[in-house]
Image (cartoon, rainbow over all chains, first blue to last red; front, side, top):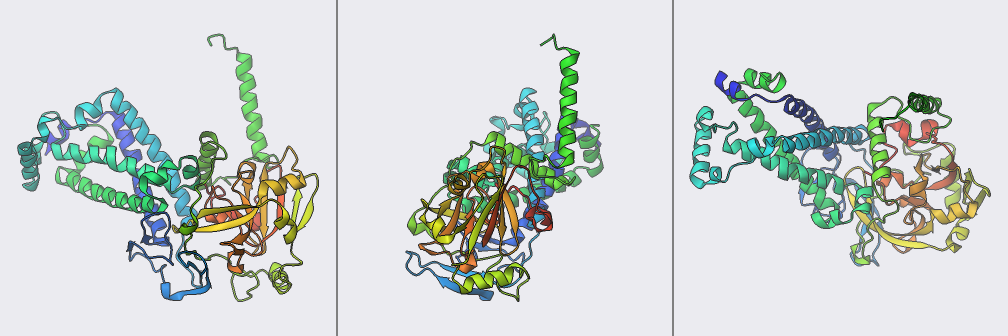
Length: 248
Length: 255
């Protein structure tokens, strides 16, 4: 396995950005999950609450108890005959610190990510090492790399230049699709941001839709994290960790 | 810029030292305090970034009449209920008396850094030019709801009492003993209103009767219910143990 590590010689700016992003990603994931536990329901559109139907109710907390809501008010003269109800049970809520921690980690994440992108573009690292070549995307080449992964033959799946095709596709789709969507949907949940840029609400079809997309982006990033760590272990955990930390 | 003199650099360093010293004393505090807490520092960074980068007084989206939705009533739903944890020995019984008199004895005191402090009765506020808006209430918990709110713009009330040029913050004090504030930018925002009507009716008790704040550019918890007193201040006031920032929540909730 040592030749695998030898191929990977990460420059210092990649290593620093990687660990800053890793720490802030984990903080965002944990604090985001805590925030979701407070209202474990997802909706489509602008509105959604305990009194409206949900797209999805996640079994991650006991905060949604429709049977325990008291309905003292019916606005029967309004088109949708909306109601108002009081919640007379205590809920799990750590949002005081979880939200502030989420946004603090988001600052670190965005700054480290911006530095990575700027240096990555300037040094052509992204174009040279991350973006797949056109010929790599030929169906036979894709099938070849999938086969190599299925047979855990990572050494031969490695292209001459460094990263293999599936690796390039995973990194670039996270970098250029999932993460921008996460940042944009995150900002769409900010009342001050959507006042300044209402187009965000149109882009995602409303506040709750943005929140739902944010959740599925989180799920995609958790999947990426699991596969990433699994591949690091499969290709030599100690060598890979040393390569990303000390560069050798 | 190659002729930068050591004098100006020293002046700059002295200036930095002085402002740091002033910030530490607290009595000239013009920003929310961080208490040395890294989370509050993050909150402050977000607040400063929003104030620096976002255009001031852009309007929150307003919706159609048919978009009005069901809306939970959370937090305090009746300050006079002695069986609830929010019950305050001082204001609870007072609110109960106000309920009995159907708020005819209720007054909103507006004071502090103003030239003409005064107490407003509910009909006085209702006689002022009103604003009706159908907006989204966004709760920190993650849910949202759309309702129609009718009230008097806070800026009209502030104009009526004459805020001093040094005024920087507007602090709300409520009958459920909550106290929290907003900066002058949000206070003068055209959609920041003191609402006495909801969905075409008088504001229900569970939603903050007789008067609540609507701060549409921030999360729901900044829109205090059951208003009792408004204090205009020149400096940031964390309002001691009663202040919401003391309970571990971000003072700025535009995000």
